[in-house]
Image (cartoon, rainbow, N blue to C red; front, side):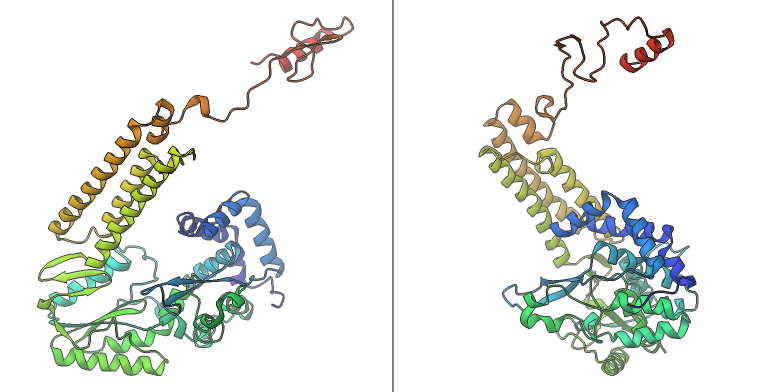
Length: 467
């Protein structure tokens, strides 16, 4: 990478302390709850000296010596886990790389002439809620679907673009940005930020071709990728919303709403044709084979809309319950391990587990707060109550067989006698005079030497006697 020109105004924004700190806060918040222990440890290590690390990062960006290290390829299994080729090709950069990518994203989204390419009333994924908007992301998209139905849409077709991020040409989206951003030094950094170099290519073998190491494809895991997805589909959004049809898109998922079945089918043919020109296809497993009536019910973005009812999809409900079951199962496993002498982590205690359990319920409920099917939530509550009842029963069994210290451990309340301490040693006499083991200074019982002026005796008192 060539040395950056320090006078570039956009580069100054990227490396500004405010931008780097804001980016770090987002990376930290996301990484703190990652399922990957490696990611969590990297976040913790960076946090230990976040101020110094950000200062160093800003200095290297200012001097033009920052380099994006090779990233780590992480194949996330999906569908049949036995199928080695069924996975999501996640690319995970270092913490520093992710901070710089996030800072670049903040600069790009603030460029007014670029905003029309990714901010439109038909796209809802990967876009930060604008000032004055009350909703964003999935809730905003579902509300637009309901508006379209209220305005006469009677038929829908739902679709998903197959392997979307792996089909985005880096050169095309880079050219779109360069046409708006006349800053070659910033564009050089941007090009480096979206380039994919992998540190574990040898471990991937035949799966390497699924990762975007060439011009076609952008990295899932790079915070810039959703923006690039919106840029490449800017024209798609325009043509799909001409006339009497609506097309609402969330990254690679979209729904066509039309006044009749024929119009919906024609608009889907237009979508297929346009995407073909971009080298993209629709996923046969996730795309309607033909339009269906709104009255039949349909699912979009994990939401079921059925004859006036709006609720989380059956799959979303099953996944949520499974995550709660796993949480309780891990705690029960830790209970059993305690009996064998393993220290019970506080997070797996009764209080720690129920606190996380309640947090998960609140988060999930808030995410689906726009749904109106009270019966579905009541049924979930019954299931959750059963899980809690069974868990408390196991806790009670463990508690009966534990001593007082074990019961406190199971509950998650600290024992004072087992807390780590650093006690002060009691001072002892030494030959030739009484000295404190704490400081090596004369004991309080030792008189000051006769030659010591009175004001020095007062200083000694202040040093020795706590105030």
